[in-house]
Amino acid sequence: MFARKILNSRKESTIEVNYKGSNGSAPSGKSKGKHEVKDYNKSLDEEINSLNKLQESIEKLNIKEFSDLKKIEDLTKNLGGNTRIALEFAILKKNGGYKWLKGGKIPTPVGNAIGGGAHFKGKSTNFQEFLLIPKEKTFFDKSFLNMKIHRDLQEPIEKLDKNFLLQMTDEGAWAPNLNDEQVLEIMSKFCKEHNVNLGLDIAANSFWDGKHYVYRDKKLTREEQIDYVNDLIKKYDLFYVEDPLEEEDFEGFAKIKNTMVVGDDLIVTNLERLKKAVKLKSIQGVILKPNQAGSLIKLKEVLDFANKNKITSIISHRSGETLDNSISHLAVGFNIPYIKCGILGKERQAKIKELITIEKELGFITIK
Ligand code: PGA
Ligand code: ZN
Image (cartoon, rainbow, N blue to C red; front, side, top):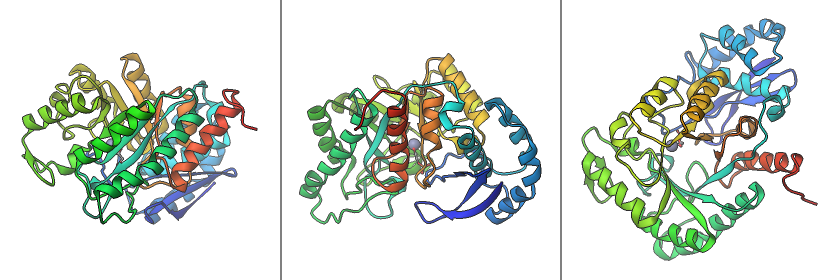
């Protein structure tokens, strides 16, 4: 086993671990929740050194089953979430990926087609992600439709944003200089035409100043934000709404109705926060990000609790990604119904292509 530095899709340094010939690497977020596990407890270089010093002890551990990852947790308890996740991803790969786990269902892709917010430096939408959730039968067809719609969105965007220069967000979504409702108008038309569900990651925390939700053209109080989001759900028939309010407003989330309300910054893949959300009826869906949880065992505990309480799980990439495709394997291996992994860009395609390969391997599709 050895660890080293690589660059992620945002050209930030991150950790890659090689475990007995298999690689795992960690992503990093930009619109992070306050309560996430820390990426690194020390500097990246120090963490890499510390992990490399554990080489012998890690290689000696007898990791046979998923639950044996508890031994990795214990051995690396002083290290950050990214360091442990990169190592655990490598171990997952070495043990056969999804085959090591018990599942076998292919998830539905939740594809980010247009976006802005914290994921784009220039002038863009307030909402972070406008999402496509196709209803086709196979993952192959769903992901292909997402790509086709992404491509076809260029034309209506150019009609509205005369200075559009094909700029994209960190996740490879178009980043036009338009307001949220202009984008919703365009997207809902495409969704109706192609029989696709429409979703939003509002990532409201990123434009909450402690008193107001600050938009490019308005400022809303908490109550006004709740009404506004509920109106948008009705008007645009939104199937999925992630983080409609700031990360501490569990009660406010419960006031968003008639859609799948999803907690990302609200829950940060943390069991205690999910318990609170279930008690307060805040959400119907939960984002699972391995490095938010800081270990795969913790991620599984959150998933199990969500399943028990009929909360839908969505496993997710981060805005700063690597070529690692472990989330695809976790989705299938744990029967997670949705995966958020972007549409275009090589780091996003790495996850999508792996799922198409698995779908073929499991006999759900035949590609000649
Ligand atoms: P992040 O954003 O990876 O920048 O935290 C992704 C998301 O909010 O879903
Ligand atoms: Zn989010």
